[in-house]
Image (cartoon, rainbow, N blue to C red; front, side, top):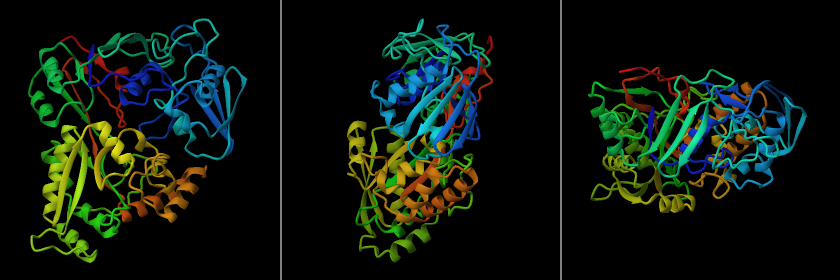
Amino acid sequence: MVFLLENSPNNLDPRIGTDATSQYLDSLIFSSLVQRSPQMTVAPDLAESWQMPDPLTYIFHLRPGVHFQNGQPLTSADVKYTLESIISGEVKTPKRGSFTIVREIDTPDPLTVVFHLHQPYASFLGDLMRPAIGIVPRPGTPGGAFNPAEHPIGTGPFRFVREVPGEEVVLERNPDYFGKPPNIERVVFRVVPDATTRALELRKGSADIADLNSLPPDMVVALAKDPAIRVTDQPGTIIQYVAINCEDPILRHRRVRQALAYATDRAQIIRYLLRGQARIADDLLPPSNWAYDPDIPRYDFDPARANQLLDEAGFPRGPDGIRFHLTLKTSTDETSRLIAAVLQQQWSQVGIALDLHSLEFGTFYADITHGAFQLYVLRWIGANTDPDIFYYVFDSKQIPPAGANRGRYINPELDRLLEEARIEPDEEKRKQLYAQVQQIIARDQPYLNLWYLDNVAVHRARITNVHIDPAGGYDFLTSIVLEDK
């Protein structure tokens, strides 16, 4: 089958690649110690079981009989090498920060790996989940000397055939996969950056499927009318949000931030702009997550309440009806710019004049990292499947460059709860702590959560049995069936 990619992978070494395309492809080629279940709990992958005898020790027991795609047996030494190559700096990677908490790795036998941590960290398993990290074969063994970026070798359901940078990546079925081998024999991932070109190739049958969520909603609706094309639309966890600079003289007022939420008609945007391909988000965590609190305050569309809060915050309307001006930054992405335009119209109804600035992504990202914004629109892809994202995004110690608290939100009570949750080994107690975290964030509104995007796959009718993981990715390729049509 032919799969149309929107972007080329940056690096297929699973220790290095952090862009979505690299990680999604790595998830097909490589396995990890553990993976995430559809309920976003920890499930076995290369490790069939594990124990935590104390808060600083994790013991993993590997599946017997697993081989890399070059025939080399997988052992605990490969796991040790993979992680130590990251921790030591042998491999230059942004993923290193996730593993500096590891003090030592022991391998008492070929199927046992023991991690000793410097300090307790309850989300450690999340950092070991596929596709966050994949296990590579150690060098110095038969078939083990290779460049993972040029010829990746893993233990996953597909094996690497070739890559032509900027053009294509070819994978084929791994018949020796320890799980159920894929139904399809080969996938050619062709890089086609232009959405219209991808749509035309699908329509004429020269491609079988387009990258998930890579076609504009209107284009999806039009393609769905073709009898040879199907649209698989399933709930996802990718979240669109508006980040708020809490140091701004206007936006530092909680009532103003709450008013922005009440002034936003998310249901209307989803219905008309996104063509129903999203679900309203009231929290950064998706409802399917084990730590999600269903009782958090919600901000349904209520312009009267928004006006009341703005009055109470000390921002009355002027003679022209305007209370104040705000600037919203976006990248040049078309959907982001359209969302911004709708927010501009909706917020004008409560006296907020919204100025829009669309920037090339590099400039945009530099601005938001340095706090040079009042508001910006962006998405979280994958990171919100673990509640530790609250620490990364809202803890006062995570202001860039340390983390992603780009809005400079500071709340000492929240910091305390997040620190407790990070080291609490009991999941039920962690859930209670994260419930308090979500209550505080919902009250303070340092983010305006908009919606969880559906995972939308547009494909030829011959592709059946499409079941997309809520977090997205290409793992559904392991179970699809190709029919002769």
